[in-house]
Image 1 (cartoon, one colour):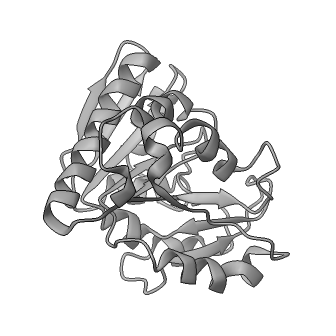
Image 2: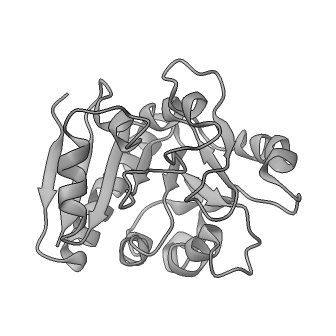
Image 3: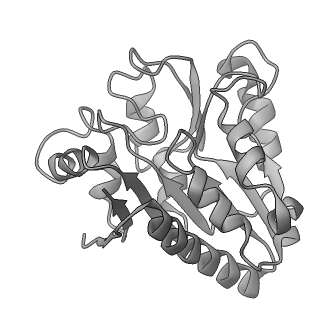
Length: 231
């Protein structure tokens, strides 16, 4: 599958370009269906993108936002992706959007899975846009090498849209949207920054099993992917 690589000079330019890409997808879905949903990734990389997207002139009251994946921590934790979204995206005009986090007060992702699934049902599906990240090990979402539910999460024909994930390098227990849900988005982007990530991407584009570098499952899917990278 032919993907589009957008090489930007810095993170500010990347944030602007990616915000335009996502805003266009949301606007197109709202024009068609009246509502639109967006799934974003957490971590350190998307902060500037969140800030940029929050300034876009969209009918945010018609937009639902969730996460691609989440660490199973409370929102008071600095490791919480939901906390990051609330601080940097759900502000200004975008404060009118509806946010559905992926973690709750249950002790484990397994125990909280049903309630999260129920909450997600209130969003407009399929997603209008999804923005993925990529770790140095080639993971994306919570598709970690060695993950206990990795095969299920990467199954293109899998029936489950949400899975818990425990992996040696994941730190906390995780919860993640599955590959079919992400591939079903109208617009799918991969957001990566830093010179060190470029060789990781090049390696992922080469041969080798997806279980070793799970981002390969996205890169090899029969759908276009917009890759945004800056040094």
